Image 1 (cartoon, helix red, strand yellow):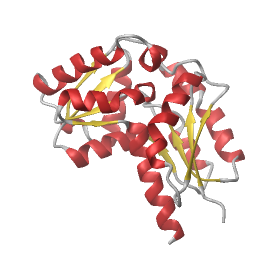
Image 2 (cartoon, rainbow, N blue to C red; image 1 turned 90 degrees about the horizontal axis):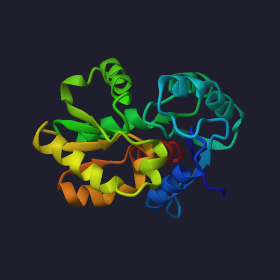
Image 3 (tube, rainbow, N blue to C red; image 1 turned 120 degrees about the vertical axis):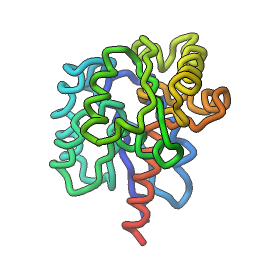
Image 4 (tube, one colour; image 1 turned 90 degrees about the vertical axis):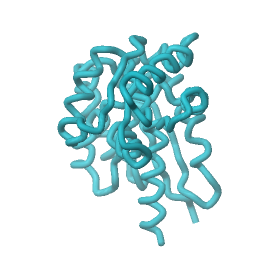
Length: 220
């Protein structure tokens, strides 16, 4: 009997980000469980760093989801959750956005959370989303790395900068959990958590964990 598949879609066209997701998700791809498959959206920009980038991938994501007749669940692996609602409209299978799942997971771990964003201009977009979710009162703060998606995935010195920002969110803003605000940060979760001593949430891991439960319980 074939394993059900959870498709994790990287909406940017940077394969380094996709490989980072594959590495971060290996512990969740276990014998007897659903298969976790990562795919790069070829039509996407190299990094999703603006509202224009977010809007540009919504319909390509919808077409990909609609044309996939094999996957049991889908993950949109970008912290802006691009195309989330339009993709949910296009399928009766569950579609998870990593920002939504990452924040909800942080709230299950701590009273307040902070977010490490890739850039200052990402923060207003994230704040709009949190207001829509009604969760701004639980946000301790959000601070930017001011790096590109590609730099967060493979650049030198990224972890050291994330640790500095994480400490500021913890010590100055009062965050008791940290959400990494970009899928490209995936490989830094464990060392960042070790350095900060509080929960650090990789939102893609959070989304796939939710999808695993959904898919498994639909089978039993």
